[in-house]
Length: 65
Image (cartoon, rainbow, N blue to C red):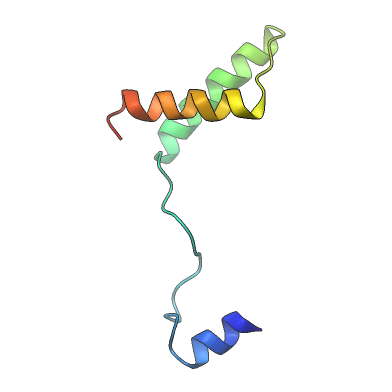
């Protein structure tokens, strides 16, 4: 209900469809990361959530982001 009220009161632009941060990686970069995670998963190695965050962070640094 709050979102509707904000739109009516023009606190939020009517064309805004998402809130929050802008994604760090472009889609193609994210696909590269996902492909890597899938390929190591097929080899029997799985990453924890924290390991995936660390890998994504390292990847972003490597891309100078």
